Figure (tube, rainbow, N blue to C red):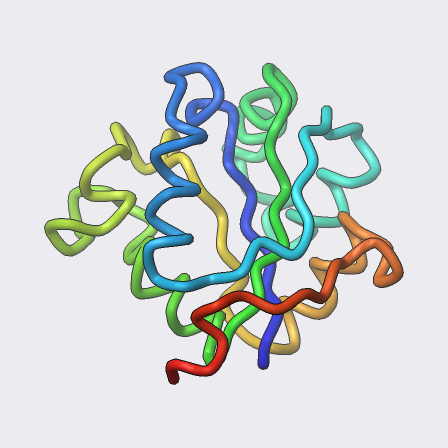
Length: 147
């Protein structure tokens, strides 16, 4: 089993899409292990996007990520990272596959509604940034034995 991080970005909250996105995740049998709404402070944004800090668009990104709370979600399942990445697809909604979350709900490359960890290594780092491991729930679902 893998656990990965998903962030529902400000435009998801502002457009009342939280439930629709979570439904997509649960429909692929991803197990919600932890979920919280939070305002991102400078420290967490700077750490999360440290690889973009020297880019000219970073101040815009930072402002966007702080204008509304985000929903941080830890999901667990077999191949959770790959599953979530397939559900979200390309960062640019215009390059995403039809039927993906970003294709269906994303408006722009900036307003692409969702962040998903791209590797096991990054998922572990990012999960620690938003959650304490003791807070991530383990429980059984009726579908656990299906695959």
